[in-house]
Image 1 (spheres, rainbow, N blue to C red):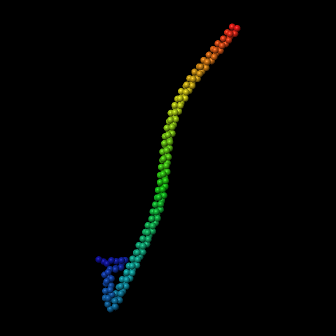
Image 2 (spheres, rainbow, N blue to C red):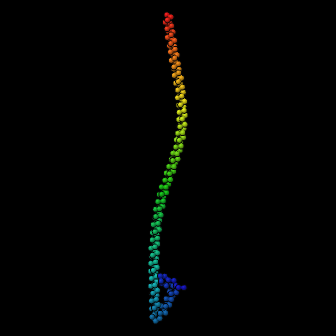
Image 3 (cartoon, rainbow, N blue to C red):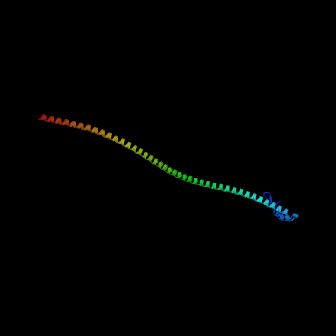
Length: 176
């Protein structure tokens, strides 16, 4: 199994343990070769740490961008909630207005039914009134006919009395 690598730099514990051994086994140079190996390993570790730092910074930038997106989405969501509340209030007012209009329409329908009932009653009473008027005009015509007949009879009686009175007066004058 290969030792783990970070950005191409080996850092296994075995290699770290071997480094001091190499420094001592460097021979007559007094371990100078071991120091250079250790310096190379330190430089590799520094490069690996720099790469890790770059990766960490990139992740931080990405996290910051994601937080900004989240905050922006939260602001938009709040605005949408407010718009939805306004729309719900408008809808409630519209529903109340519709209910009022429906109640008014129902009242108007009831009033129309009452008007139709009154018109039917008026038509019925008008028919009854016309019938009563026709009967009354008939009775008046009969009374007028009787009155004319009585007047004619009364005039005839008056003329007959006048004739009798004139005849009686003439008879009285002749007797004198």
